[in-house]
Length: 440
Image 1 (cartoon, one colour):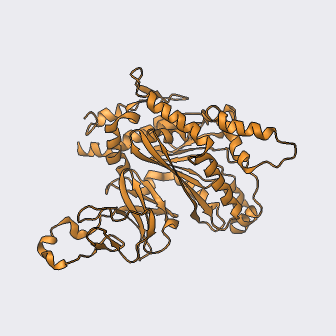
Image 2 (tube, helix red, strand yellow; image 1 turned 90 degrees about the horizontal axis):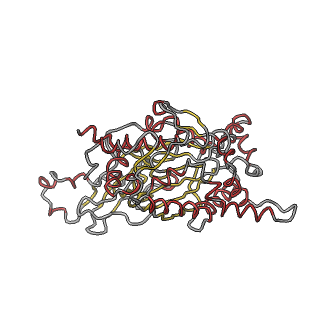
Image 3 (cartoon, helix red, strand yellow; image 1 turned 120 degrees about the vertical axis):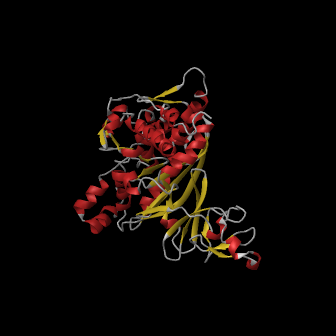
């Protein structure tokens, strides 16, 4: 046990311009991430449109903890640990549904209110009130105490004590604001289903990739590049397909990505696409701008729609694309296995054509059948295998490093800078060791 209760050993894995390969291949590090990192940070659970009515539930994981997001009778949204306090059975096995007025265990029929409180026991007379009152089970299901609903996006922090939601996210919430404000009615709905896609690599490789702007023109030449070449051979006057609009920017030159810019926020958050992005040149959707002007006024509508951020990484494990209304979750399964979920959202009050574009993007880029997604998957898996090599111990993230950047906050830099990657790994070390420092 090299790293448990050893903050110095964990901090030593993150140097100013490189990180140790154990971050990606160590089973011990992975287990500590589940108990430390994913407990100390605010982690995305789901969207309130997934549970619109009282009793509606959605099951997911926070780190490796199974949880149930459920709407209570008072219209609040609760996050409960998915465990019966009796024998430990998972109470809810379905991904989503409606529990009715209460939750009921399928093993012995213990039942619980929608907030997790114990409601009823079969043959209650068999339990001595004084003895039962001294047991943990008397309190019912365990609830996650720290739950925050930010404009419909539900986050939780598993540890009772820690950084507040506002301090953790700070200015980075502006990306979520912009995505919601793109809806004429100022709200989103999950729509179009979810695409799930298993990757045989460490979850942090996918997070790292979201602000890696030096790979698209190389890794995606065989897929997006081929699609562009086929389009270029089409007869003159052929309408440009929506798919080609979405593929083409992936093979833009280095200069394009340098000019996009990267914004680096505190606590591991950041985004590509400050002044330009691959989402900036989509065709106009008839009626959409008019609806936005009616809702916000022309000046405000233009300001909202001109913010075309590319990938916003919310540490530890989600990425949001505001202009195309998608959200990806990188769910850790093992040190070398990650489940990726890609969700799409409807802009309420916007033309249906926008949702069509969103769903098409998700299918073309993020689906298990995506030609672009498999480019990334192959290099992730090659990296996972390559890092097992005895030859070298460190992963390089030195591009455009400047001494002292660790103390600079919320800055904009060159679009090919690896500062945001370094920002994520510094945050990783901080939240991995926060509890250890308190315990030592």
